[in-house]
Amino acid sequence: MNLLNNKSSNPMFNEKILDNLDFVKEEKMTVNGTVNKTILLLIITVITAFFSWQQMLTIFSMPLMFGIMILGIILVVTGIRKPQYAHIIAPTYAFVEGLFIGAISAMYASAFEGIVANAALLTFGTLFLMLFIYKSGIIKVTDKFRMVITMAIGAIAILYLASWIGGFMGFQMSFLHDSSPLSIGISLVITIVAALTLLLDFDMIEKNVRSGAPKSYEWIGSMALLVTIIWLYLEFLRLLSKLQD
Image (cartoon, rainbow, N blue to C red; front, side):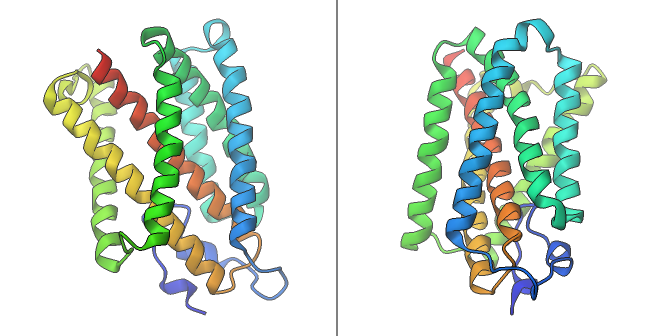
């Protein structure tokens, strides 16, 4: 088995997860199993998002949304550390992120007509496009490709963290939030990076299937895909809002 040599920038794919899994007692991971679990998580997210959207004006506030976002991060970290509970953590994460996505979508929808439907169509269109690109070998996931995307994700994370901290301190990074050509360009680049991250996820799922990972790892794979899909959707919302502003 070569599982420990496979690396991905997605935090859900981590060597520590594989160290904690029992390769002998469990059934083996399959692509179809991972796809089915991903669809289930997406259904949970969409249903919860619909409820969140309907209730947004009555029970949701920015502090509550921030708390939900933090809870989502905690669940991802827990999934990394406790993969044996992924069958519980993954659906819970989908539920929590649905609350967050619904509230955010309602806010964007109130300001920009049709933006949510367009962002959703672009997200799933990009998902299938990236799957085609991966399967056709148009872009090959090499070690150099992984390194470049990982560095890009790290830079984006630092940029967003600096923006959040600056917001709490009263300092706004306008080039990230306004509708200037620079801001639109940055959002476009970040969206492209999010889309390319899907290739890393596909590659890791396929490699771990070939390597005989246990069936419980299907939940980890599906949760990893959901993390990237949600990120991509949020970036499309940001980009489209700037283009329509």
